[in-house]
Length: 144
Length: 144
DNA sequence: CCCTGCGTTTCGATTTTCGAAGCGCTCGCC
DNA sequence: GGCGAGCGCTTCGAAAATCGAAACGCAGGG
Image (cartoon, rainbow over all chains, first blue to last red; front, side):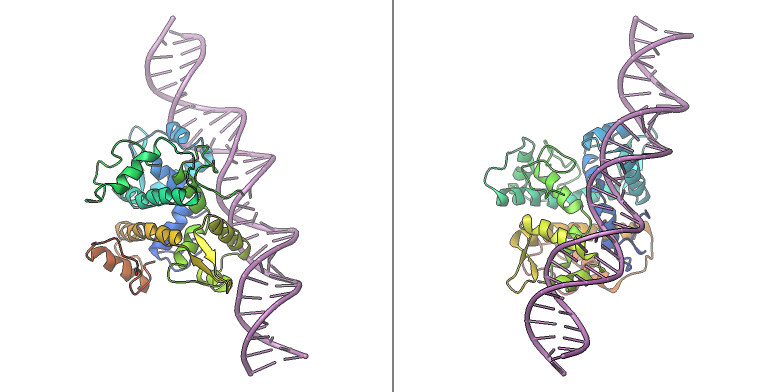
């Protein structure tokens, strides 16, 4: 499978429009999840794998190389993986989706078996949306 | 394939956390694309298919039922498909990703074969980010 | 009547993902 | 030194998702 890059054709679009490349990159299974799980700091291969509900290592390696190729993730000298500046931005761009999912859950049913962590994002939504979730981010719990 | 819903386990996560369900739903090929292409109004089946680079009709039907199941898309009496309120919100949540892809393209190389439509989002980024791209949205061009 | 476009289904071929096993390595420990 | 545990990563067959082309019945127009 070829790694999507803005400016050249990708799976499902010959135009090379950046968003289409991004949609290709992130539309692959586990891509978004990996970025999401790296948001709170570098992780090694196996720890990251565990974090991602024990996704298969083969796919994980594939995704990681794609993401590194896209300069979204980078590998530390100690071989752990971390988000690049670009990657952190992508994670930030993912934030609205996290909040949307809350609304989605709420809209689909009144009492959908709350997960403890779910409170954080809800609070964040209500909170003063001043400043775009500055650097430190993740204030407190995970917004999954 | 089972349709992801917040509150119950999904592919790759037993927790039922809303974001994981959303990641499952949108992590499937073409899901995001379909939402994106519906952002500027209802479309019939074949027209939508063409818009999505002629994706295979079988998968399109599958995605559409999943999205309808998730109340993100609804079918009009004249059988065209349109975003629900929830769907439009999802599309809005997708907007930061569209802008990110611009930055991504810019960062990866200086001159990556610009597509005419690409200008819109760039402009939007620079523009007064006041109010979250209010209802009317899509002002003018497509931000792909 | 015929042609075109529509929404939708079906089915075999291809691609992607899974999942378990294994490799070589490093580290701490007895 | 020998041992076990954890690591990053690869390989490979099986299962699942996706593709792509064909077809169906239906509507409308010429």
